[in-house]
Image 1 (tube, one colour):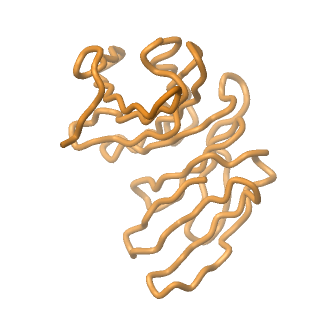
Image 2: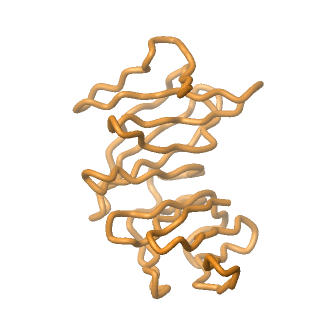
Length: 173
């Protein structure tokens, strides 16, 4: 299940079980925008890109849903499996998608054109990814849930990924 808020204050909700994308207006009106079940068997997360489109991830696909409800596949299959989280870089408009399990977590960069590049994988420091977001510095904040909830910040510079602070949990306070 994913939730995001658009520029108009509408909540965009992705329902895991039904694969419905719902729009909840500020006055509480709920509208079914579309269903992405034809593209994924499980909806995990969503975010909003720089164009106002909704980027939705699930089983093995990244799809773009326009505010009018049109759905298009950005990337699917291949290495993209069991996707659990997505965040959109506000500068490049690239999407970061992740999956996670013990020593098998992966984060990919996916361009709006559908090019997929692995940026981190197999790190024992990143397991069981549950959510991701990009902060004002362009670093990826990764929420994980293994034995306990953990949040890590990854600094991305070119092809190099650094855990900041080294071997420590991220504390935004």
